[in-house]
Amino acid sequence: QRGSEASTRGERQGFVMAGTLAHSISLGVLSLCVIFSMYLLLVTDVSEHKARLDKIHTPIQVHIDDVEVSATRRKSNQGSNAAAKVVGEANGLDEIESVVHQVLVQDMGGDAALGKETGKKGGSVSHDQKHALQSSPIKDEFDAANAIAGLHWAATGDVCKQSHKDIPGCTKSGVVRMLVTGVGRSGTHHTVNAFRKKGFDVCHEAVCSQGSIAWTYGVVDPDHFYPWEAAKHRIAGQRFTHIYHIVRHPLKVIASLTTFSQMSWRFIGKHTPSVPNLATMQPVLRRALIHWVTWNRNVERYADFTIVTEKTQVRDVCKHAGFSQVECDKSIPQVHRASRPHATISWQDLFDVDPHFAAQAQKMALRYGYHIENDFEETVSDDDDVSV
Image (tube, rainbow, N blue to C red; front, side, top):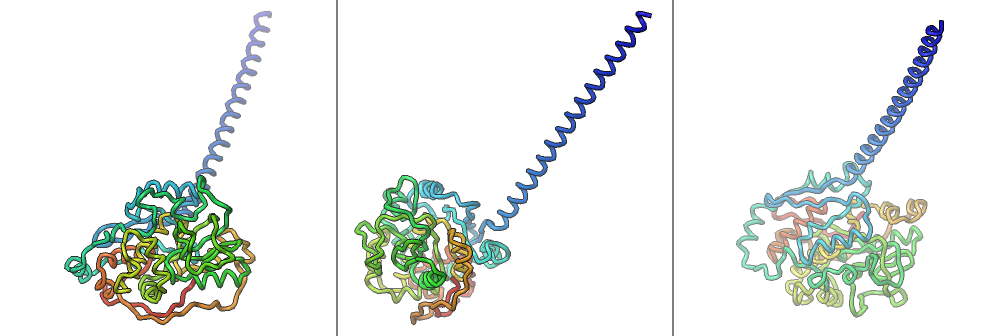
């Protein structure tokens, strides 16, 4: 009888242990299921987020003379540290294609995205243009592939000395939200007028409390002199959180630049030491061509974003800079556009005055998403209408 009771107790204990073990296994399996489910949700979320980024920020790749030129849009705003890193890695006068840029376009993605349009419309230098480049008596005296505006790039590559960008370690007297800069005649007048009509305190060729739109602020002048700057709103050590590089079709801009005043050319010449005597160079069309190439290269070195004038809406730049969405979406009457009579030019004209810089201008135009016809005689309208 005692043996039977012991056997019964053993069986009970075995059942209890088996039940406990089964319960523990069930809890373990349940925990693993929960963990696996969370992992799947995380992976799915990351994949969807990456897909959205890839849709907006696509690589830009075009071919020129069978040599691939690529510029990848910045995946996210890395801030001023990234700009400092880019300048540090640029190492003086390295090719500007190494600079990372994010391109801001009208709908921030989709079929109108610059990367897609470049892929569709990208072309190559025509046979006639290549022949002109090879047979031209004009020597590449200024190293067109590397010439750049800016007083300090060759010596130090110091972005603090060469730009007004707000970067840790750069001295400053204050911080302003936004600067839009680039080559003059790229749409700055229209842009500042649109911002002001929406109610923002933004100045043209000067600094106001909420921002500045000025081609002259593409460089830092050691004498603190900037042409056309308003006396009450001079830049005095302020730096900018967001810097937007504004670009427009090179044939339109270069043609318009031929009407620049001598004061503007003296300022440009002072800040383009890589091309001696640029301010008085003849013909003026060659001067304008070289300025378009070298000044854009300079701004590319430190700008956070590129605004393609013909594709970008002011409201999108406004929102991206962090201004009030309500104010950015405010409807405004048609904004005045600066109109200056000037000749219509072609790529043929540019290759005639300097095939080396003309070839560089075409490479940059393709990178910005513009269509380059193989026809040597391609021209564009001489009107100054822009979308920005």
